[in-house]
Image 1 (cartoon, one colour):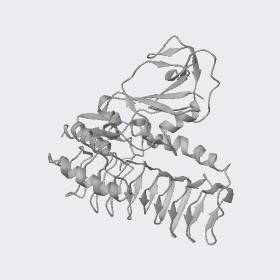
Image 2 (cartoon, rainbow, N blue to C red):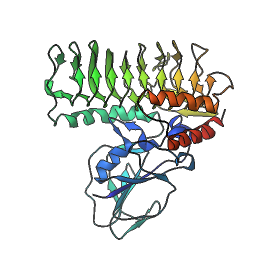
Image 3 (cartoon, helix red, strand yellow):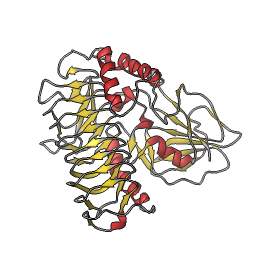
Image 4 (tube, rainbow, N blue to C red):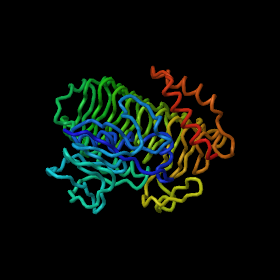
Length: 391
């Protein structure tokens, strides 16, 4: 076992909208947070995250302190948050080493008696399997690369028996229920991957899972087809969901297609909100973030929606839409491809007022029995000052 330290990327448009509001290490790559993936490699807990100044007030249950980068004494493992390890722990040598993926250093092994203070280019390299993320949009790519194996890992556990009245297409051993409640009438299609439903989750009749799928603790699924997605914890979802990551504590409680998207924490998607995930030309998707144009090299990409954002009923989000943290999107059926943080309406220069945002956040958090504590309030105030200033 070793202490784990994570190194956040420098602020850049490629990490928006999430770079404003949360460390990349607290985003989901496959079923797991990137932090959790590095902890599996290090077989230890994360002691600190080296993060930009605007994120150092970030607080959430289970999240280690975010601090300025400093020297690390071994034994320790330092990992880049823009790399998602695949789960295979390499054989670590007695001496210091760089962890290499396709000729790029993505981490460092610091044995007892050694120190890390930066890139350490002279250290020998050890290959590490995983995915190097080019931007927030590659969390969809990570889902495609990592979720299948993540779901398979759960099949070694002995889950609960499937209730009568459910249908399994494929091997029943690939349905893993871990303290969840599942109504009769749920279909589990596991021919292409396992379906995992965690404790305290509730799945209603009329739901069709097409694996691989991971449903986190406390999530409620009200019906509809869900395929190749990670949802949770404590989300509420309904309708067609495909190749999408819900970081947690988000609502999509009504019908409407969401595909190849990443949905941040505390997001609420109004009834009938729909994401387009494919251009009419079938070409590669390009993102627009302020003045920055970002080539994703992806043909399928829906929306990236930052924490605490909300959409009105009937909102149509075009292919490759980026919705900033705290935005309240209404007034136009089809908002622009880039909605600024804390936008009020979506298309103009108006923004949500700080006290209005904090009051709304307090009501939203209370719906999941989470209080707006002083540290959380300070974090949200810092998020508002940092992100809303770009309007």
